[in-house]
Structure formats: structure tokens, C-alpha cells
Length: 210
Image (tube, rainbow, N blue to C red; front, side):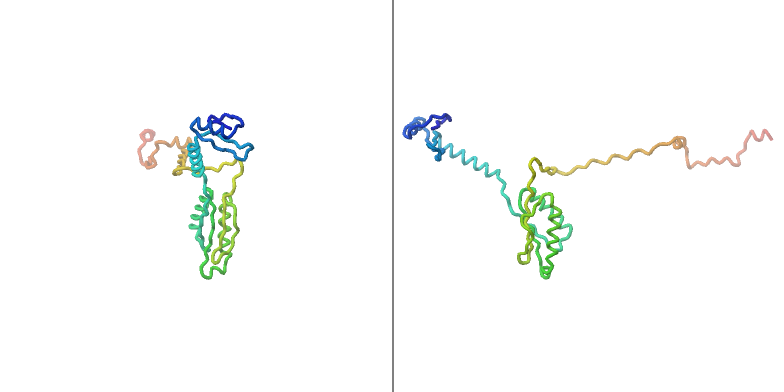
């Protein structure tokens, strides 16, 4: 027997336990019927049911429901579409969902199933770091299917979070100034457009010597 404050009252008759519950305006609830003797507690049963339902709702809200996503390919899927769909598959796997890969054949394409298998193998190579094959490729009518699941993380590893917002790349540093030389310093102030041509000018010292 446990009272409303959680104190153990020991073994007592059912009538005495019910009388104690009535004195406290509470209810006598059997909390462990499999014990010998059964364990009962004095409590507000309406409040107990409300708190229990609230905890169940919170647990259900925080529980992740695994979904099976489906992504379709064609035997001749172009590189741009392939990269686009592969990025979506990676996102689904990162969110904990399974992904069903489908290669849809049309007309005579069904006579070359190896093209569809090549597409699926290419997807596996692109996602080998996050995916594991849950169901191998198999034909179902004119479709080839394969199921991928998220790769389980090793204990102690933390999956890196993708950056939030736009990626800002640092600006490239300015180029270093060209090295200066003594020759360039000596030529500083010299005008290349000026021609120092002294031919034909009279030298007064030379005239005096003559």
C-alpha cells in the first residue's frame, strides 16, 4: 500500500485501504496487479489519467515515422536529372526515410534490363556513404525496383549538419605587389616619350677651343 505522498504503508486489508482513500477524497488504484500481494496507491485517478495521456501524446509527437519514398528513373536519364534526383534521395535518407528506386521501361526498352540495372548501380555508388541496400534490384512487369535504407551510424559518430542559409565564401586575397628593383627605381620619373637628341646643337666650349 502506498499513500498519496508516495510513502509505503505496508500490507493492509482492502477495506482499510479504501477507507484511507475516502478520508483523503482520493481513489485507491491498483498499480501493479502482478505483484504478490498486489500493489495499490492512493491518488487522484482523474489527474493520473490526464498526465498519462499527455505523456503519450508528447512521446507520439516526438516519434519519427519512417516513410517509403519513391523516386523514378528512366533507362536513359540525363545527367542533370540524375543529379537532381540523387540529391533528393540523399535528403530522404538523411531524414531517416527509406527510398524505393524505380526504373520505368517503355516499349522495346524492356529487352535491355541491363540499362536499368546500370542506373541503379550508379545511384548506389553516388550514395554509398549514406545508403544501404534493403532490397536488391528485381523486375516487376515493366519496372525494375530497388529499396534503399539509411546506413546505421556507428556509436559515437555525429552526422554533420548542413549549413543554414546561403553559403558565403571568403573573398580571394589581393595579389601581392610586383617586386621592385633598383633599375626600376632609377628609371622612376623618366619620360619614355621624351627623346634626348642633342645632335646639331652648338657646344660653346667646343667653339672656344676652335
